[in-house]
Image 1 (cartoon, rainbow, N blue to C red):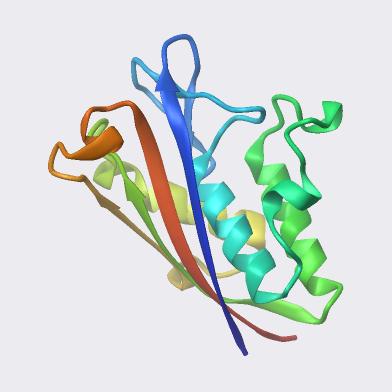
Image 2 (image 1 turned 120 degrees about the vertical axis):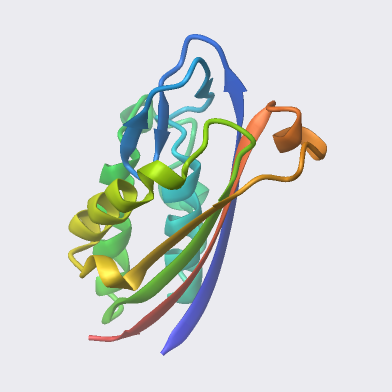
Length: 157
């Protein structure tokens, strides 16, 4: 068994869709990034890659690559699952936290869990997602961005 940790942050801007945990959430702002900027998926990818000692998401899917421009982050997660499988690992569990002042994310968590579990080929019970605010402190509190943290356990298949 191995444990991994991941973190990601993206700026909130007008004119972009908000994608979190693989689902589109109705909001007046979206996250800025080379891909769809799904901070939750990016943090999970980094946790999984780190646990398998496969570097990070930027190494495998650089923001300078044309093939990842505007890409759906669920594709990156599928590729990450395939990468850890090349070293004989599978997902044991995921525990993630999204930090956002708005929109309120709790109503969306079951859909995110179901989506991510399907993409990773695991039971939704092994995908824990929590939402929190920063009590109006920092860049997330000022609604300038959203961050996500993820911890994972991977095990030999």
